[in-house]
Image 1 (tube, rainbow, N blue to C red):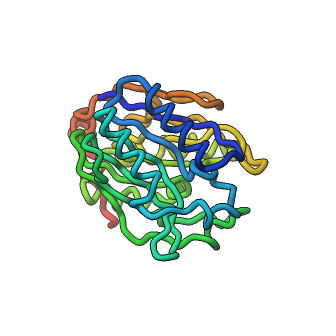
Image 2 (image 1 turned 60 degrees about the vertical axis):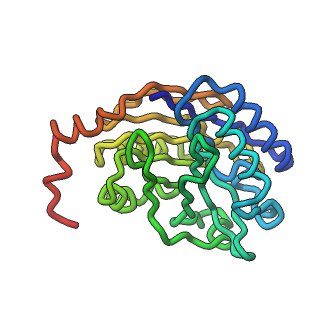
Image 3 (image 1 turned 120 degrees about the vertical axis):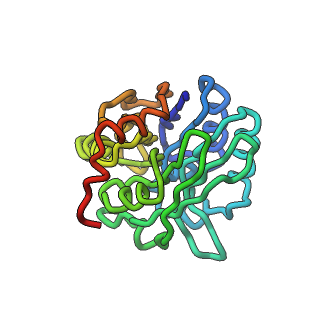
Length: 256
């Protein structure tokens, strides 16, 4: 299985230009079974004044264009997150598309970020843990700040997750924490974790880049640089069950 993270370089350009740029990179991405994008890339995570204006319904223009892209590429696209507008209720929503161009899963970010951020004031938190059924196995969806809450990932494992897909806009100032949490969430759950982070700068805030593919042993299979790039890796989905049988730590849990 080949996975590719499109580590978009953010700037303060318009939603329309960001969408066009992302679609162009999807066309240019190497052959992949799964393509991922980062968090709130249509306007930029730190562009809080644009959340309302750039928000869209799930059946709006952005998702419509990406459904066409998934059908064209004949692959799954985890299109990262956007500001979803559901009857004037705003959410940080990630969407997984299948090769038929259909919405396979939708996740509304549960843990909203309030530290030097207006996200928690402007958006509403999601309530549902989402584990999607995919050809490579059950995949739990999460977003950025969620990485700091291990109980979410353990709950996804309890629902059968063997893979974690993470859309993020993690800042460069906390790069060390980013690397730590990616490896921890993968290893403690004996799961693959594939994270796509933003690059570039938005509203004066520099993003960390360093999108990652981490295996169930917590080893980094692939890691991006700081700038815009494709981060591609080939992984073996069957490795999850093999490792969980060899090292059955999840079966030794005593606190639930």
